[in-house]
Length: 357
Ligand code: GCU
Image (cartoon, rainbow, N blue to C red; front, side):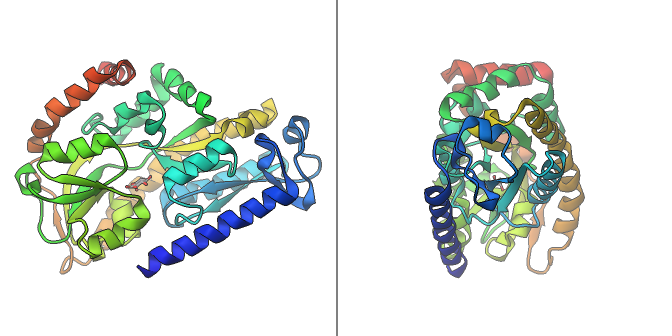
């Protein structure tokens, strides 16, 4: 409870600070960026080449500073500043201090902030293409997802689709494989899901997924998840190992069951006007750092996963790593098929993934 309240206080304070910055220094859609040295980025021209100042972009992040995505973005920001001769700097706001992911997507769209890392579910709420990535068991492993995002020609079309909603997909941020964790019993096969209330991200696809598994979904933002489990509003949740350990969910849900049911991307997003407001040269640097970030996150991810899981006290946490995964696949097959058949854009991505396998 305390943690949630603290996040809310920080969040209100941070948004107030940003709004104050906008009122005193900036105006126009793409020119909401704060510019150091009291210089407002007043026109497109001044944004392309901020005269003598550093444009400070704000990037929202909903998890801790230990997270591989955060560490890579710290390095990204440093390098971006150096390679643009100090024209740009990215300031990172971890721990939901700028709000939950859904709010931060809206802030990026309207230009209140410049960047955020959001789960796929959020672009999926505006563009149907992305819904395909919410599908359980779509990819066999994260390397396959990385290959798809980097190499599939369909991705150009997918990414371009968000521009009409005011934001660009800057890059893919790998986010591991998701499994179930529960407060009072292990999950050995899909039969153990019967009657369980599980927190999911906010998408109908996950609501249908939990129903197909025999439980029910309670969608909520991540900031509410710890207390949601602790207070018994839900019986558990599902997420990747890094989030499970870094955000200490093992304290309230000590049964980790390796179901590997989802490989859902996170995306680094950027306000469209901000992205196209850069000079071609600066945008090329930005794009290069974006494409390098994919592998950098994945390398750090792999280095962290085993270490973090091994750090858990096995007298308190029960790890079940021989789950009957096929029982989950069988339970979801018809629901997946229905989703593919429901929409041309989802089908296009799904077919492209199958063709690449
Ligand atoms: C993962 C993912 C986040 C997402 C979170 C969630 O940790 O990386 O982007 O917000 O799951 O379940 O909400």
